[in-house]
Image 1: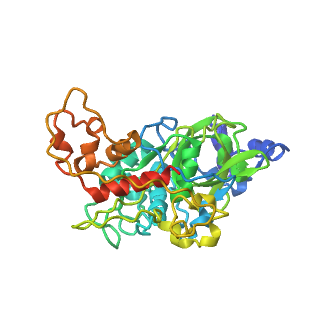
Image 2: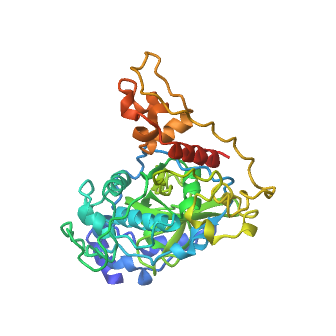
Image 3: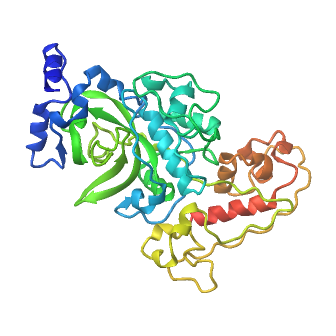
Length: 434
């Protein structure tokens, strides 16, 4: 193995795995992480081009604009989704010699999201994305924006249905049927996925649904990581890498993220690593462009006639995993687990939020006349933004004509309103804004 490194260096290439980096990292008393010796480093046997080829994230610092996650109360100094949502944790995967990190992090993030939201527990297939997402480039890389757009439109089949075959860098044609076993069901977020544009938004999403996909810039020293809280110290830029955030913590005054990688369970800290925030390491720029995840559960479809939805309930699938006694210590549970935390009882615990006033009944609308030049929204901006982002304009958009773009044709926003869905949206907004 050492001979391979020496021969590569003799040929003019500077290999990222080298003893000089290890010595300087491990000899630096101020360093919060340790480097692994080249003899034990799996990447020592790969060429420089092969290592760069694993960095498959394109547009690693490009942000996007979509809806933001719900507020979940106070964010604690530390949170570990591996512990909070232990039943939703799966085995660490290995992308091997393919720049498919973008697909692995997306598939593994959605796997955790759907499990936490109570939408099933299958391990989703990175190969399905590598082979079928034509907006991205398989083993030659992809972007977070593209892959989550693909997931929203098409969903992902299970890893059992489409097992991983691109570890040697080859790309299979998108299969029409399962190449493995199991069901060919496609899984996706019940509502459009969310782009998270800040550290706080990422934390709130991890607390709500267990994981977020983010990106960062990889330098040579990272290829020597063994354990600890990584921050860039030396070496050349190798490329962008996509990973799955599952939590965070603090070491004295230093904030760090807890991250799941796609380099197998024997790499790093049992397949995970810790890394400082981009504020403290502008080179790595970890999560500087935000992240992506499925942070909302399904929208109920009331039967006909529709019953009146409850005004106080749990809105997160994981609430049943907790008891009332845990709510006082885990304040982030309260806004999304009102029933479990006892906030729907006649005599509420002191930590419960004050109830929002019940929304006034919405009168049955008459057929909308041609709009006047002053066409406006009747409901609040938050309400109408939610209606637009959830694609409800055709059902309850008659109170949001301006936001829904129905000023020229009010009938496009429906001739009557679904009162049950209207009330449900009101209740959701009252919960997430406490």
